[in-house]
Length: 296
Figure 1: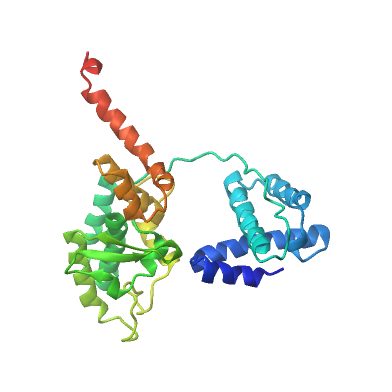
Figure 2: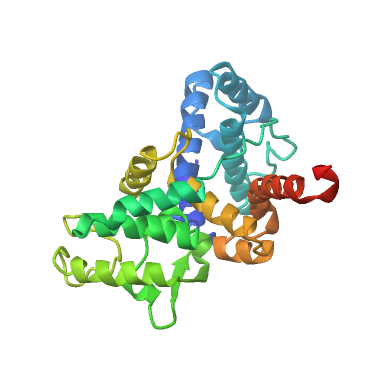
């Protein structure tokens, strides 16, 4: 089936993160199970569009969202592109497949008041865990980095003298993001406390658990969800929403779309433009309040 070779290709040649590759592999294995159960064949490289279509129909019947189905099919399509490139097959069965229509759900960012309330709550703590959690929130909100990017931060990535931090993004693409004074202050406070919990002197990871080992994605989610649950009634309270808030608040304050794109580490403006919806709403509000004709 060449799945191992495909995984190696994504990791080594495409430079995808282990998190992304795991998602691709999971999508492939879900099709493997269906294909074997339905057609009693293990090798999915031999599947055709009719068979793949029956898998899609089965997912629809299970009420899997169109967005999730599209992601799964996209993973499978990439797999077939790899097989085509490596001359294992002579035709991609998904070459002419059209994605299912999926609604673009506007994700509601946290308000600046909600962010301030969380940071105010965290400001009173002086122990390692409290300061680390405050740093997690501040880094997300001040840099807009992704969760996996935050988890993988190294001590050497922080340059206090230059007031910037190096972020290793998708496909190992590096970007530098400025650090505001309040974040630098929290970093310095955290680094002092970090000395007492570090398990191995050679550990280069910036953010650690209380046991002195590198933090993990689930812990980061719990931190953000936990604190923002106290101040926000929004349905989604995740690190991604905090990243979303970073971008939206910058645009609301007049930041250039291209600048926000670079800060977020997006490869194209199209990915950044999703954040303009909230800014347009803010502009509309200001417009209604300010336009002379609207006051009459």
